[in-house]
Image (cartoon, rainbow, N blue to C red; front, top):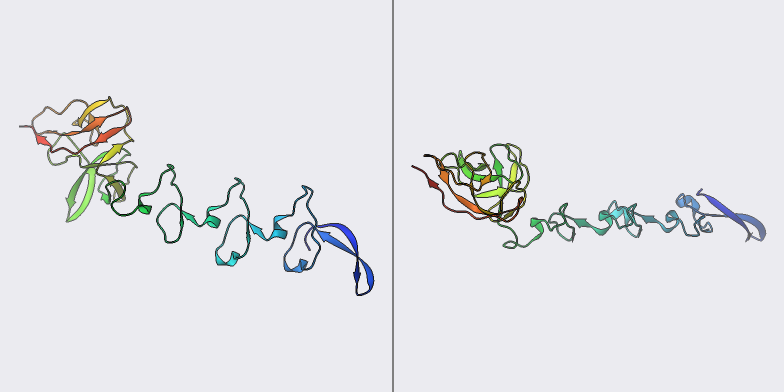
Length: 226
């Protein structure tokens, strides 16, 4: 039996009988019991058949209950970050809409491509043909054939798929000086304010720095120095 409370006198088959009301419910065993409020003067969630998470169809007809954070749990709202039929859209960890929930043609120009080497967040990347499979690697101004064609906003492990952005603002840079930027010949995957100048290196303008951490990426055709 659930937690008992004050007792009352009731007529049971013609006999006056003392019956205890309950503050909490233990389930079916407490059928037809009288309900009492808790020490806070409210009805306990077990008596309301309330839940703060949902297990699915088995919780049909239950009363929604706020969770420890004082909000309705995602399982009750049927909310999701990534695209799924008949779900409520939820913002991702950065407070933005995930690209998968947007209609085709709306949002950033991106592609999921396997990385042939480990990439750091903010790296400028080159798309290359790895045995007839598109791969991404760090763009490199110290040599020909590795122009910057996009960038990644999150670190990507070698042989893992990473989201490549082909346009827009790279917000994961560090130490930039506002103004024109070129693909660095000193550090693969990074921009620089000074263009490469040695024979065999590539000069490629990659956009404009608008702050120390943000590069407005713009693809330009590289020129290999003679």
